[in-house]
Image (cartoon, rainbow, N blue to C red; front, side):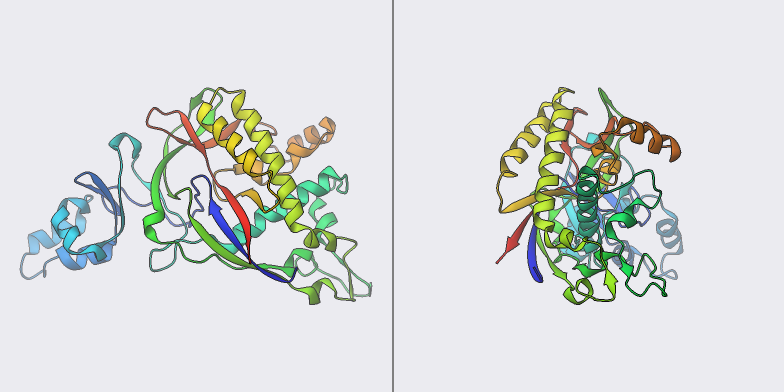
Length: 348
């Protein structure tokens, strides 16, 4: 494989955070009538803010207000759609104060960062290496055992960042996603039988499609100066690795939720397991929802002694695998969706 286009379809709500401060309730996100609006605050101020000399009291009131939404009406928003990025209908009980924003383009549209896709693939490869017993997890630099090459000329030093085989894997950011596919959902950390503090998130809805370009730099892989110690095979088998690891994660999570009597999520994983049997696609988790389960390999380590050692050494609270999950809640505060599952297919 040299260069391909992969289509990504969200199968559950997806939140990839922008790292920006939360969207402020009643300023960035406001309720007008029966809808929530994500305002373009600068555009709103340009319309509603009078000249200071004309009405100094109103000028001061708007600039110091904690409720910018009180100065806009449904009629104003209907006449000036540029005043908001998107609007949604939402029951009031599902909206909790400030909202964590997703990553977005300056024009307001969202996308899936190539780095998020690459990171999820890298974790899948590392899990396989652990399963094949190619990694000594007692070594604090165990990732280098999988991804790092060595210079054939041992008189020079090859730094890890430059000797990482995954430098050869290049994944673009996805095509842009229109704002009408953005929603606000309530998520929570689920503790076996009850939920934690609710958090409002911007998410991409299930069923959203976009595409990324994926390329493997063969010049780097075939570089005669570097001995990749067999790790090239991982790049050549990415599709198969992601398929097998995705199926295992779906089975694992399905079992987890079935044991906790969460029928909505159990049925979600049942449907995903049927689709995952196809060789024409694979499923992988992205973004905020999967948490430590998607960033760790300890869940596939069979040796309890090694797991206990690593948990103790790195002070992993709650041990591994975690007993909690981040989920989208329904209006009755019951688990409805896991976060972050996407389906990947090749585009001819």
